[in-house]
Image (cartoon, helix red, strand yellow):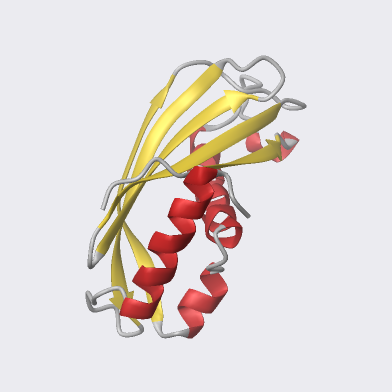
Amino acid sequence: MATSSSFSLDIAVRFAETDAMGVVHHAAYIIWFEAARVAWMDAIGMPYREFAAGGHHFSVVGVRGEYRAPARFGDTVRVTTSVRQLRSRQISFDYVVTNAATGQTLMTGATDHICVDLDGRMARIPDEVMERLQVAMMKLTAGCP
């Protein structure tokens, strides 16, 4: 199932996230992707903690990113997360990182995940979870609470 449901998270750039050139280190963006992904799950009413307590995780199997412009200490970035694809065992997210004040695109990216059980074996996303994800994504797309 593909969808355009999206959620945005604002993050204040911390000094520790910058490198010797005064710009955000590339590794910070991957952490921001995760923070936005977890916030997306909270926003749709399926907290990741609840999903994990049910005996599953979404294991990252791919990360991509294209840097467009630097972020710097003191900036606030907005990470907009959307689901590109939801399948029986997989979920893929797209991200757009912008400067929250100016709207300038700083990075675009994506992550791909497979559902795994607590032993790390690929598993189907449980039916109850899949149904909740699909319903919540439709509500988020429609702008409903």
